[in-house]
Image (cartoon, rainbow, N blue to C red; front, side):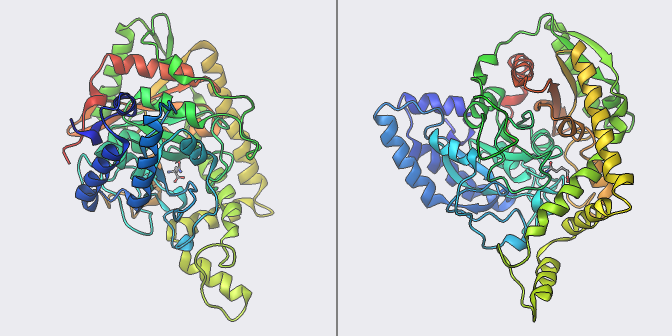
Length: 483
Ligand code: GLN
């Protein structure tokens, strides 16, 4: 038995029966990581000693009969999510050496549930990107083909889960960064309804879009982890009121009579033929299981990219103003405050982050605010209304997660617009605030393909049920990369 390949629920059962120990599981994953992470480069920071110490404590609790939901399960955390005792760099030089003095709420809840924090995973700088190539430290490699990107910005987390360097991981999704890397690495990525998981301790990129999400090997794990980290948090004023349900109850293998909409705009020309075929085959499978499938139109889809790239940079330009060389991390020399700030930001931020700050500052400036930012907010409402209308008629909408499988490292790095296009199918859901999950649905050549299931706000249960039904009828989630 390869311990590093176990899902969360499989490992949990063996741990509870005391057939394996948390120390053995953690050790196996750490050994696996030291063997392959030179190639994959998932982790910015690994904390093996702290992890083994936590594992020892977990074993003691397991021996005394504790049934904490994630007791003894090793997790990797995207490096934009604060965890006490570990550096949080956001993949940026500007936060080099910064250690948050507190845990994010998601990490607090993982710790309370008994999970073991392995370390922090690579990300595009401040989660801006689709490939991890914007990380100021190094690029993560796709475990299915190490000459290709793992997607982004949560590429380190997705690669770690796919390669067996963690039992599961947390990512963050502002405009697709949980779902797109999950698709490109052949794992499950869930973006919940906006406000379902607390953003407290998640380093802000675009606050009206940012959500933490689990990256897991299968749908059961996604439901398990979501149940632990979701729920109201008084520390986040945008957090949804009320406790989160037990999402594992939604794991019912049944789609008979369910209405599934296929947004025609998501099957656009220009997407990879094989990707489209895999997704259509998956939809046929759902149909054969009794779902009623019909086309639907989301007419404002084509505005999601320009709308996102006005709103996200605008919010980012405000959020990133706090990195001035005084409060956090890196600080350059300067003869006065202004020079210190200018130099710190000039040297500390990478080119993509600077591009976004300039774009956002421009869109928010007097004279352009109405023409760009305000207009984008209005179009955002139209995009949301498209989903409201479609989801009145349909239980869920199904589409590809990404227009293509993992692309070669370097291919899109030179052209920001081409890179932005990689997220063309995952930008509208955050703008609308709706939940969506990406699950593996086959291969294009040797590379995994992801199918995206979108639902009504607050209805994570429905997308989990459809995803679970598909998973039970397929084998894709059991495939592991050759690395
Ligand atoms: N690729 C998108 C961006 O660069 C999405 C990133 C994200 O979801 N964090 O903004």
